[in-house]
Image (cartoon, rainbow, N blue to C red):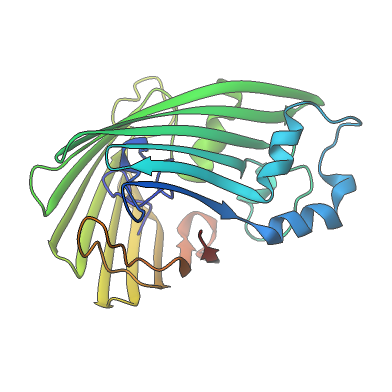
Length: 298
């Protein structure tokens, strides 16, 4: 969907683009749930000698090791949600999709970040969110640790329209990596609008970096479309426009159970999801990149 997610609520998956967009996604009044990544743990065991370029582990490395398997732990009730996301990839090699191995974990303990995010619903129409980031970055033979933050708000003027605003503060030495990987940069405001005229159709638009007077990144427009021909399949498309030129375009699909809540206590969303996207990068000679995720949630 062109990563136009600033105004789109989507569980913990969307916390990076707007911490206020974490929505209540459980059964009953209180829910504790987590994401597992057994393939990441297996890859780490298979290549444990190359997880770090350093000779000794640091205390914070054990948190990153745990994140190879326990990727997310969350708690939520109807008005509050707290989430911990571990070991998100920040390696420069991950940005080069032409040679990036899917289960490559070399140097992952040196280049990662963890996120703690909280969301509060003040009313049905307003939600506030905040995130704290802990970055590990290896540069010029030196390991650096630093902190960042983000803040967001979701406003729902009607059942069909949602607006979102988010703000970021990243340390200097990782700012360029976050910009390259997610089109997010420090000390800028992102504004998003999501419109759902009917349940089967969603349109979303993001305008990124609108306040970045000191930022090297120009304004960007991200546009996304999601169509549900049935409740078990989602068709998606989007593009990223920077200046007057479209930089990236994508199409894809999702398989799962995409029905919303039936009522306040019964939840019907499938915990097994498969998503695929094909992206064309015009900046790199119209290179085609494939993205596939298979999620099992508990």
